[in-house]
Image (tube, rainbow, N blue to C red; front, side, top):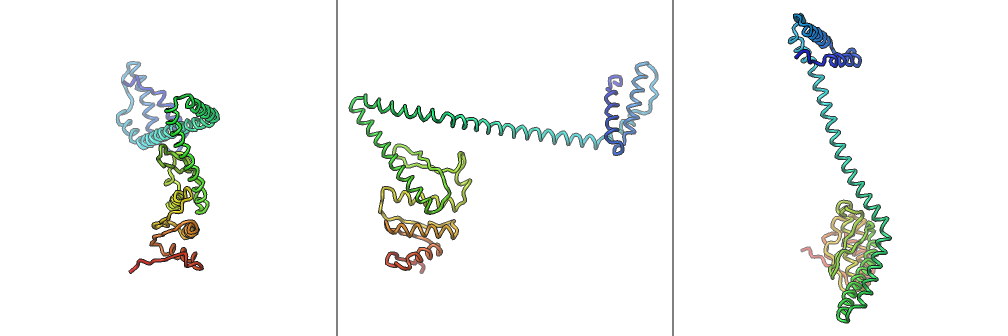
Length: 287
């Protein structure tokens, strides 16, 4: 077993440690052990009687002296392995994000081509309708009429929603109409793959919901009564003033009913009708 020991590597390592740490590490026993092992290897090779000191005792002292260094190196190895794993995970995440950005850039580059294709497809669909028998044509015209009606409704809502957002000074959002076949579904967003609730405060979400509600209530020039139920929850005083201004301005086109527990909103509304009290009726349900 002694003859197979890599004593050259051991001695080279001790020399390197001695050069790097000339005073901080006691390598005397380790160097003596290396010398004794080399002498023992030579005696074994020459088939002579081994005369080296007690190798067991010497190796025990070296193992005890080197234990803290080995533990420190082991800890460093584990730390480096963890850093390597973390960087690997970060790299994979960055590569996935890069692929998403590349896909988005490719979509943006091909968007004119896609729009042209869609335009041509719509034109082809209209021409195809003209060639169908009359019953099918009438049914297709009905479907087209429904889609056109939806587009008109969506355009009306979009214009009014923009007006309400300006009046209430809401954050600027993108409005998408995802409903079809009579389903009034719309989606608001600030950035792709991010919900408004993750970006906007509760107050900002509240005023956006109010803008949506008032825009829908005004669609088609409707003069039906508009009812608000505690419209200023989660809003600060500045927002409450803006909401009060907008509610007061609605009175010129329709009847407005406001239920609220907020004394600040009630005070702001009454203040706006101080010189035209005949247009405002106030009821206090307390007691």
